[in-house]
Structures are given as structure tokens and as C-alpha cells.
Image (cartoon, rainbow, N blue to C red):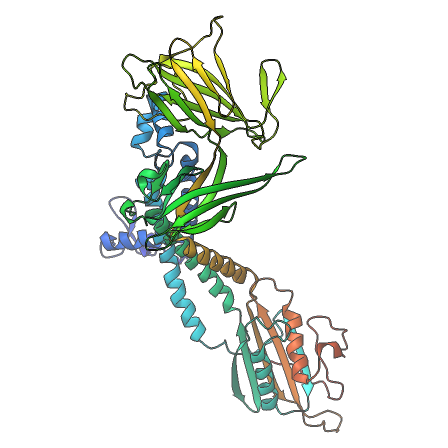
Length: 588
């Protein structure tokens, strides 16, 4: 009995005459026990793991996992960007918050699990690229494949009969192929190999399209470069926001920022100590729609060892200072207020930024007045600034224009404990009312202050006085330093170029064989000539393959494609025929 089995199965599972049955009931080799299969071992397991990690399937899976792992960074407040938001979330979620914190959900991009996925993706891409690059470089140094014997089995075919010698025809065809397409000069020409097949027959093999694989490798190398650049930027970057009031300055030190974040490898001591002073701020609005038209901050920049320079910052036109880009992020009004307590002591004085809430710059702010004299209550002033005030209903005011033509400060008054001595950071734009109470007027209604620039109002119950001094502007500046931005741009462009090449560069092979024309039949000897057979093959669908082959044959004949005189009307897969030459047989 003869039994056939699939290739690769162990012979112990192939029953043959004389097989015996082992103790477990299975067949065994005649004359002895089953052979012991070698153990995979540590080296084998490592090789298997490396092959899995460097497969394209795992690389795509890691890329998807990286995208999924980045989602918590958009759902939860992140400690480097919003530490106050993290504290607030932990207070509101006493059970789930600490668990999420231990898992790194409040610093996702520096967590162990996100870093592990990032590094595995990097290793996977490198492991995929290096072997493919080695194979591709070897292919670039290789020769095009030899001309097949039968050219009639290819999707693109053609043939002509010419009066020239086979060698001359082949050399002319090789020159045409090396030159490439005249109407597409940026497409590389063919690699050409001319071969003497003997018996007067010559052939030429041409190939192009390795740009497709080159683009694929460039795309993957650019992805690796992007990963390295992004990682470098995350380690060496810094970003901070600062509010600068007109007439005041800003120094580039960590303590001067309102918020500041930095990479793990960046030392704040490396900040270049430049200073920036806001001299004037100009804003322009459409007089009909009140839409913003232009914002310009006139500043004085002083860099180490340099003279003060007058510069401007506009939206989308940042200022470069100390290796950082200074962006104009926002603007508004900062009313300068002076508060004296009941003992006449200066309790508060300075400009307080009010944040605009609508297109007419109705701005909200909080003024926190500490106690400077013994026995005095702390005071909180909460309210709105109206740049152009209008009383549209008795007792109700609104702003009708973003420009400060008639500014009005509307404030409610609170007294009690502001919580400034607890040591817990507070939001400067929010008043903690848990230990405060509203101040009322003589009628028992909530007290509301209405102040215009230069006016002073006395607070009830001996709380002191409030003076609205003037109304300067402020700007919100965003300073960013990322040394990897240029690398990200370069590698992104390379990735785009590589992807375009891998998608649109055609991979083609063309062959042309020139053989001596046989003698004619019927006793008439044909004129000496050469039969040329040509064929083409492309990787995938390529509607331009047959026209490309026709172009080469036309140039071999010394005519333009517009001078076609093919008997088949130019249909693919048929033969050319020169008007003065006899048509000979095709190839093998």
C-alpha cells in the first residue's frame, strides 16, 4: 500500500507496510522508537519573537495601539499641562482618581505603557526596514532579467520588421530605453542589459520602477524619523504662557510664567534670559459687524549682550526670541484698581486682567484683597468690565463696542476669608465663596459698585474704598521652544514624497528581441531585414504599459507616436508593421 501525504509532515505519521504500533496506539518507525525532535530553545524563541515583532502585521497593530493609547490623554486632564485640573479631578473622584493616577492616566505620554508601545513600534519599524533595504540595494545593483523565449504570453506585445541589422536595432532600442520618456522627464529611465543570443539574434532587457520600492522604504524611514523627532521634542521642549500688561515687562525665567511645562530632559536653567516689554497694543475692528480685523503688540525686546529692539507681534506672525517662538495668543483689558482698607492702609493696588467673554469684550474678573491691618476682613470683588457701557434696561448694563469709549466696572462685593493662607493654589479668575458672604447695602440688597476711570467708591461697614484708576490693555503670550520642529517638517515631507512614489511610480519590464528576417517564399528573396518582437510586463494593473511599449517601438523606427500606420488601428497586443518592410514571423 502506498500512502501520499502533504509535504512537511513527519514520516512517523505516514503509515507504510511494516509499521508497528507504539504504546500510545500511534504508528512508529520500523525497527526503533520515534525520533526526538530538537527543542526550540531560548535562541529559537528569541528568533521567533523577533520575526513576529518585525512583521508588518505587528507594526500595524502597534500603530493602532499607539493611537488608542493616546485617547486617555484627551479625556483626562494632564499634569504637565493642567495640574490644577488634575487636583480638581482627584477631589471630585476620590475612588477612581487615585487608581487612574497610579496607572499614569494623568501623564499619559510619559507613562510606562505608552512608552513601551512607542519603543516597540520604533523597533518594529527598524526591524522591518533594515532587511528590506539590504535586499533593495542588492536589487538595484543587479541586472534586469533575461529576455524570455516566448514573448507572446505577456499582456503587452508588439512587433515590427525593419531593414537594419539586429545589433543596430537593439543598440538603438537600448538608447531609447535609457533616455526614458521625453514628456515625463522626472521619471527615471530604464536599466538596460543588451545580450547577444547567438545566431545573429540580439535582445535587450529593460526594467524600471525600483523607485516604487525606494519610495516605500523612504516612507517607512521617514516614519522612524518622525518618531525620533517627536520623542526628541517631547524631551527637550518647553512651553509657557504669560499675561503681560501694557507698560510692564516679562523676563524669560520659569517663575515669570503663569503656566510652564517642559520636557523631561530640559533644564529650566538653560532658558535664555531675554526680557520683553509691552509698550502698546493696537486693535482694529470692523465698524459695522464689530469683527476683529487686526491685533498688533508693540514690544521692546532685549536679548543678552544686545541693545533693546522695537519689535511687533501679530496673530500668526510670532516673534523669535531666545530660541523660542513668541505667539500672540489673546488680549483684553486689565483695569488698574486701588483698594484701601478701613484703616486707610493700601490693601491692594495694580492692574487685574479681565477675561473677555464675547465679541464686544464684555470681560469678567476677580479682585482679591488681603487683610493688611489687624482685625480687617478680606474682600473679594467679582464682576464685569464693559468697554462701552450702555444701560439697555434700568439697572442692567451691557457693552456695545469692543473699544473702550465709555468703560464701566460693575462689581459685587464679598467679605470673609479668601483662603489665601491655606497654601493650596487658587484660580485667580475664581472666588472661593465657601467662607465668604455678600456685602449688602442699607436696604438689605446685594451691593453692586459702578465705577468709571478716576472714580472712587466707599465700601459699607468700614471696609475701605475702591478706586478705578485707569484701563490699560494686556496680551496673553504663548512661548514655545521645540528643537525637533524642523526634523518633523523634513520627515513629514519625506514621508509624503515616499508615499507618492510608492503609489504612482510604475514598475515595468520591457523586452525586445531582434532576429534576422527569414528568406521570402515563392522563389522571391526578401530584402535583408530584422524582425523585432517586443513585450512588456507590469506589477499590478498598468494601463500605460502598452502605450509605453508602442512609444519605444515608434522611436526605434525613428518616428513619432502620431505617425502610427498600424494595420490594427493601434489596438494593444497587435504588431506594428513598417510600411516598406515585409512582416516576418514573431519570436519563439
